[in-house]
Amino acid sequence: MRALALLLAATVGLSFAGTAEAAPKVAVVDLVQAIQDHPRTKMVEDNLRKAQQEAQEEAKRQQERIDTLKAELDTIEEGNPKRLEKEKHLLQLQNAKKFNFEWAQVVAVRDYVTDLEQVYAAVRAVVGQIARERGHEVVLLKTDPTKKLNSTSPEDFALKSRLRVVVYSDATCDITDAVIAQIKGSAEPPK
Image 1 (cartoon, rainbow, N blue to C red):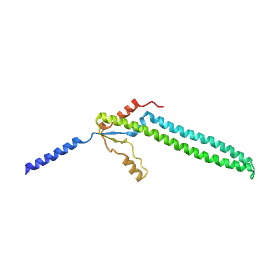
Image 2 (cartoon, one colour):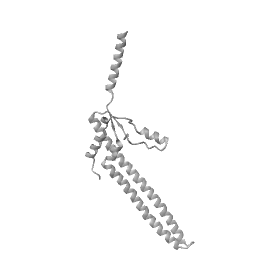
Image 3 (tube, rainbow, N blue to C red):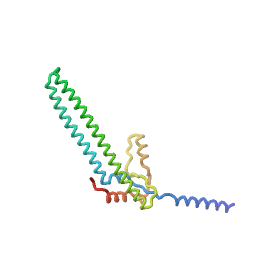
Image 4 (cartoon, rainbow, N blue to C red):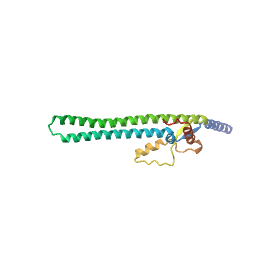
């Protein structure tokens, strides 16, 4: 009976040992940092700021035309047929200004997201390449463990804590520096 128990224990031990050996080789990467360090990210952010600034400048120019028209309206007496036409034109300019500014914002954000998705895809490709070269089968997203969550509500805490996929990782499985070095060494020059 004792021999059977020893044989069973050895078999179970061997099956666990086999499972441990079959565990995937895991790496972690700070994808946010890698995206921030990508050379194209600055260009993408600059393009967004430029588009938003151009929208504000155009809105300012349109506001100057509106102000000029308002001043003209002040010189025209009530009841004058020209006044009604100018009031109509003023309303059209005000509506156009609002629409044009909001539309410029929509386009700027759409372009920003599209460009940022391309950077994300480029970074993911580098992560995959380095993981394959090093024999990693799984790469998990990690965040800087020294940064606080800075939650503002229980819901915010729940969301932010869920986004931190890796609670602990040994520095030897962190491929962030290698990813950033590869990105900086082979990224396309800004357009």
